[in-house]
Image 1 (cartoon, rainbow, N blue to C red):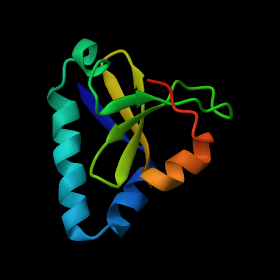
Image 2 (tube, rainbow, N blue to C red):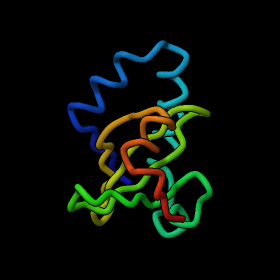
Image 3 (cartoon, one colour):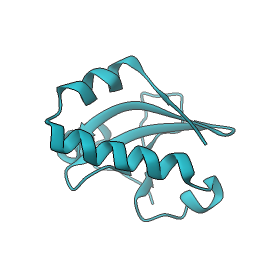
Length: 98
């Protein structure tokens, strides 16, 4: 799968400590090699209820406290942003769907 990283996600990634950057890099490697059909049933991936977005957004566990906000189109995964678990819950109003 192809991985595209939005500018705001790149900024978030660069601002992380090196240890967290490595954890996110491992998560991105997992996404690159993932079978999309199997990925949708992964416990690391959750569909988000994001009423302000026209895209179908997903959260992928990048570390214990960081989530990758993703969108998918065909064989391309776009990293929209990187957020803490708490910030993501506030943004979505804690209405995540599994």
